[in-house]
Amino acid sequence: MKHTLSTQQYLILLCITLTASVGDTFLSHGMSQVGQVNLQHLGLLLRALTNGWVIAGIVLLIGFFASYMTALSWADLTFVMPATAFGYVVVALLSRFWLQEHLSFPRCAGIVLIVCAVGFVANGPSRTEHERSHHELDVMDSGVGR
Amino acid sequence: MVGSATSLPVAWTCIAGVAALAISGECLIAAAMRGLGDLDVIRERSGLAGAIRAVLTSPMFLVGAFCMAFNFFAMLYTLSVVELSLAAPATASLTYVGNAVAAKFFLKENVDQRRWLAALFVCAGVYLLSK
Image 1 (cartoon, rainbow over the protein chains, first blue to last red):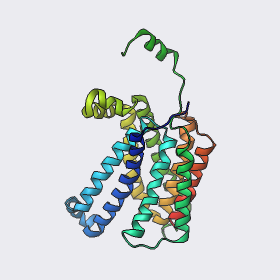
Image 2 (cartoon, each protein chain N blue to C red):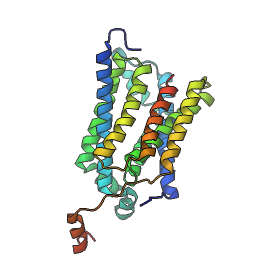
Image 3 (cartoon, one colour):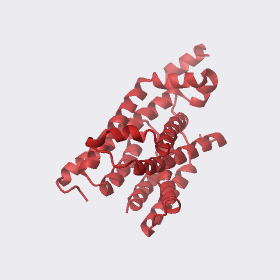
Image 4 (cartoon, chains in turn red, orange):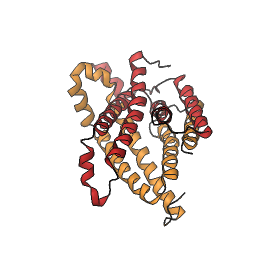
């Protein structure tokens, strides 16, 4: 059976991609403002929690985890995985256009490969149907759980 | 590529350990979510609190989350003995391929040709992005 996704489900996959990559970028930007944390300066970790970029990054990563688990409740792990990998592409583009970093040819090739991978999987079914066990069918027939 | 005081076998043991923890965690969480059913439906029926309760009372989810937390600290240790340029792409690539294998054999997912190809493309893409 071919499972097609609703618009809302595509939005959740987009949310996974954006929250993970933008969250990591915010955390990286925030931690560069806080300074290097080591065993002698563990107090800096607490100070990091007052940095706006770090707070925004943590909120986005909580959003990532929530949307990732929601996606796994209606799609296969091997379907959701490339969506998370697409985050690498977003990070590369953010580092090029926001942080003004250089985007080399191998990185461009990497972006193309990951986009292709997402395209392969997005065209297929989102979920594997498993045959229900006799016990589950018996429970459904008896009306329990309705 | 490997930290100056770290031998190659130690470095790859660390990388394999981090990947194994990530694969175990993701597979356990995926199995727990599949067992619970569509979270959107649960949220409509029991509200957000009910959906959160359903997730947090799943033992499989809790073991998976523990593996992911342990994976985080294992990655921190690995980064202290292996250079980031090797550790990050190697763990990400191993995790993608390992997840595809584990999804096929443990989660019984239909990992067809195009999903295998996608996993390999992601590995190659991650490697190129890290250059």
